[in-house]
Length: 78
Image 1: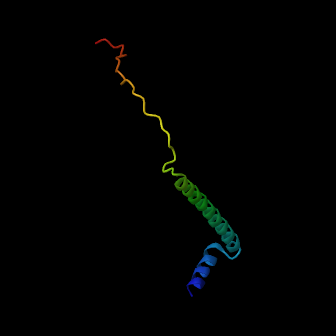
Image 2: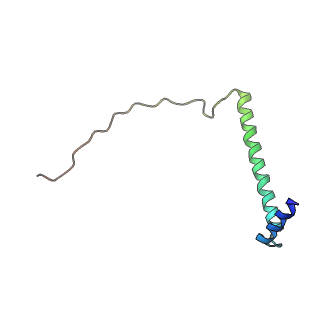
Image 3: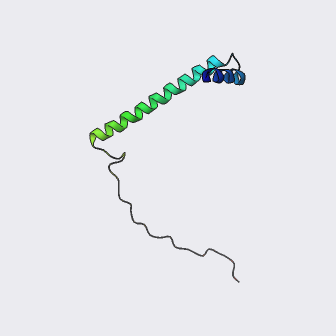
């Protein structure tokens, strides 16, 4: 019963001609999403198996810098 109501609403909103195109594009989008999710899961699994807990394992320490000094460049002499 609920599927009939949903189908009726879809036909009213999109028209009978656009329903197959909409279903096809929705299926393709879901397939791409599933493929992307599987790729991320595989990468995470590989990282766990290799013992790497973070993406970047080697980082350089921050270098110490001198603070900026304020200079007066005003040409007004009052």
